[in-house]
Image (cartoon, rainbow, N blue to C red; front, side, top):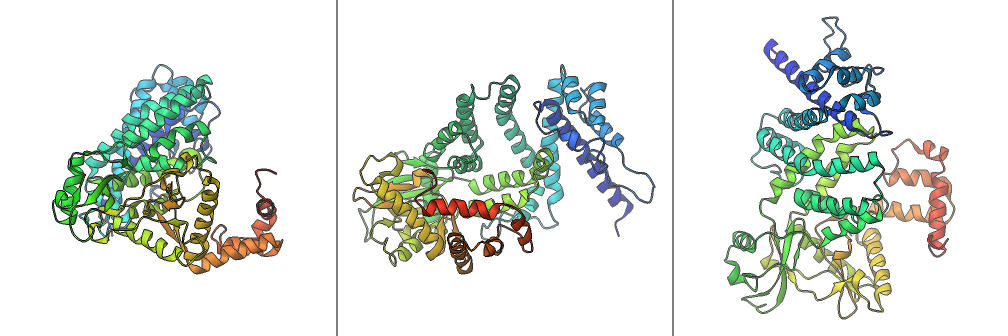
Length: 518
């Protein structure tokens, strides 16, 4: 039903996408270190479904089969500074030859790739929007939705291009430094310096990337110890925004001048700054609770659009990431799952509800006298301002008190209780959020990121542990399906592997006193 002009425009846009992607892939391949996955070797001469081989939709009516020549022409147009040797290497899918041919033309090839990425993501953003352009990235009560964000930024391609260019410019130096370290064999020697550079870079890139760094700072299974130590600075050493902006936000959100609500904020510095907001110690200035010491958390200005744009760009980059790395999973789904929790953290009213829910539910357990969340001051809390009673304490991992090991056990039991009993799990347990109070209690801070676990999922997990500890291995494959680790109908595939034996060994060691000593 499309008109010839519409079809022609669609073909032209797809050709332009192919041109830019070809240039970007060529840049990556030209500078890829020896032994790294070769993009064009995987998607080159012997792959008839190569992206480079399809710079435009195949026209079955014309009888013309798409070929690599189109990709080469696209690259020739995009990387005008490249040589014939570079183009020939790309056509052959020979990454080694491409690296050699790029010598002397590094600036041209790199510039072509960088410019290509900026325009490719901008065009993908523009192509992703629908006819109705929302007024906000997340119009449905600020709930994460990649579709509404795509429509919102489709109407703002200049904003997308500007942010993409900013990300490339700020991260380019770090990326090239890592590449040079790998080529020269200096990765280990320069690791401490690069880890510090990465921490600084993530801070400069803004809240979304600070949050990513914070998540990585507790993933010792993914990151080298040197990087983990450096990234831990992001847990409590994030740059603050001006107090004047915080006062303005308080007045706009709570409907009264900050000085009439709180004493001690104006003219002071925040006691802590995080990726999404910062905290002031203050006292309530009026009302029944006048003089009560409180912690006032104020959200960073304009953060919703910043986060939405970064999440939009990260999601749009997923196809390129999968093409470059061969990642077989659902990268977009992974980004969406993370985005739901991340964007929910921007609603401080939900954070208040989560903390109060924990306090109410933990009172029903034997842990009621040893662990708690800060009490919320409801009439001084809304979506962008959270007020809780001030809790004196020290970070658990920095305390030298004799009861720290006991509090660690309390923390473990608290999280197991949340996961298996109360059903609402605190998902941000980095060291900055666990305090030891002077009374020897455990205080859990920052309830913005939580996961609700349905009762049937909690029961399935308990059954799974029971089956493993009882050596009832025949039921483990179905347990893994119920828990969502294995797709339905794939139980037989688990039986063919040693996954059940590995899980049994781990839980047996834990039940016998921990795996570390064994």
